Length: 297
Length: 238
Ligand SMILES: Nc1ncnc2c1ncn2[C@@H]1O[C@H](COP(=O)(O)OP(=O)(O)OP(=O)(O)O)[C@@H](O)[C@H]1O
Ligand SMILES: [Mg+2]
Image (cartoon, rainbow over all chains, first blue to last red; front, side, top):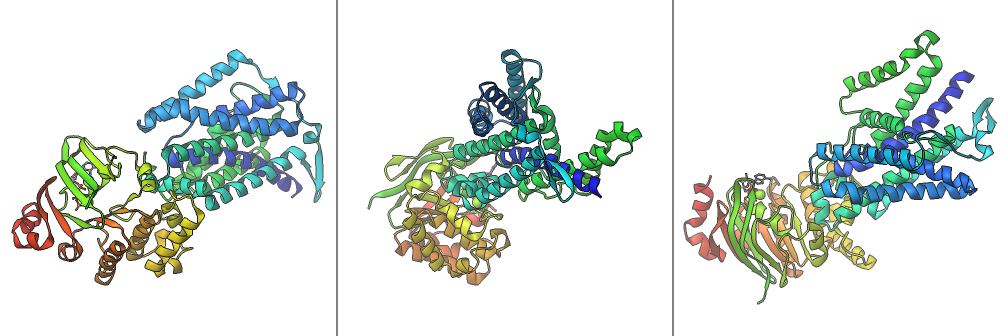
C-alpha cells in the first residue's frame, strides 16, 4: 500500500509535467491547427537559463521567473519569425516548419553551448524530502504537483474569465467569426504561443528539478510524450490534454514500479500498447475537442 | 442622403467559380436594403467579401467614405460595421453571456459594454434568462437571436444579416422581422439577405435581385413585385 501511494505521488508529478506540456501543444493546436514540435526546445531554453543563472550565482527564486520569461519570449518570437509567414500554408507546411525550428535550435544549443549534458545548480532544499502520512516524498515531487495544480487553476481562470482567454476559446471554435467580432488574429495566436511558452517553461523547471541537468535534446522526449498525451486526451481539447498527460504519467510510473523485472524491458511498448488500446475504444481521445475541424485562419 | 456603404463592380471567385460578377450597390443611412436571389446566387459571397471573410477578386467597397476593400475582418467591427453570418455560427462552447461579450470585443469602454448588454437583453429577454447556459444548448431560434444579439453588441451603424430567419418557426420569423424594423428605429442601417421574399419586401426600403452573381434588378419593393423578374430570379435559376 505504501509503495502504491508512493508511486501515485510519482505518477502525479510526472503526469502533471506531461499535462502542462500537452496543454501547451493543445492551446496552439486548437487555434492554428499546428502541432508545434519545437515546443520541446522552449523547454530546453528555459533549462539553459536555469543553468546560466546557477553559474551566475543568482538565487533560484530569481532564476525561475527568468527561465519562464525566456520561454515565453522565445515562443512569441518563434511565432513571429517562423510560423506567421506560413500561417495560411497547409498543415504539412506548418508541421515541417516546426521540425525545422526544432532542429535549428538544437544545432544552435550544440554549437553555442555544448553537445554534452550540463549540470544545473539547484537549491539543496529540492533534494530534501518530507514525511507525509507515512510516506517519504521528495520536495521536488511535491513542488511539481503543487506547481501543476497552480498552473491548471490559473489556466482555467484565464480561459474562463479573462477577455483574452475567452477570445482564444472563441477563435479555437470559429476563427473567422471571432475575427468578425474584432478579435485580432495576430493577438490570439501570439497569446496562444505566449501561453504555450509559459507552460513549457514551468514544465522545464519541473523537469530540470528532477534531473539537475540540461542538454540540447532535453525537450525532445518529454514533448514526444506530451504529443502522445495530447492525442490520448483528444487533440485540440484542453481538458483532454490534462487528462491524457496524467493518464500517461500513471501508465509509465505504474508499469515501471509494478511490472515484473523480467518484463521491464518491454515497458515502453506495453505503455504505448495501452495508449493504442484506449484510442481503439475512443478514437477521438478521452475528452474529444468540441470543434475537431481546427479551422485555418 | 449620403451613401453609407457601397460597392462598385465587385467580383468574388472561388478558384474557377465566379460567384459574384460585377455587383454594384449603394446603401444610404437609415435604409433597410434586401438582397434577394436563389440558392447560389452569390448573396453570402457579397456579404463575406464586404466583411473580409472571403477575398475580393476585383472592385471596390466603400464604408463611410473609406475604402474597405480587402480589409481584415477584425478592423470592421471597431469601425461600426458587422455581420451576423449565415448559419448562426454562435460559439457553442461559450456561455450566452460570453458570446455577447465577444460581440463587444471591439468596445473598450466598460459602460458602453454594459449598455450593449442591456440593449440586447431588452431586445431578447430569453438571452438574459439563458445567459449562463452554453450557446450550443440553445434552440435554433434562440441561437439566431444570440447571433443577431452578438452582432449588435459592437453597436454597429451598419448591420449585415445573412438569412436571419432560416429554419425558424413562423412565430420566431415574425419576431426577427419585427426586430429588423426596431433596429432601424435605433438608427441601424441594415443589409438583409433573405429567402423569405414576401416578408422581406414588407420591411425593406429597397431590394437588389441577384441571378448568378449579377444584379438583374433593383428598386423599391412595389416596383419589383410588379415586374416578373423576381419570379424569374427564383424560379429561373432554380
Ligand atoms: N467556399 C466556397 N468555395 C467554393 N465555392 C463556393 C464557396 N462558397 C460559395 N461558393 C459558390 O459560390 C456561389 C455563390 O454562393 P453563395 O453562398 O454566395 O450563394 P448564396 O446566394 O448565399 O446562396 P444560399 O442562398 O444557398 O446561401 C455558389 O455557386 C456556391 O457554390
Ligand atoms: Mg448564402
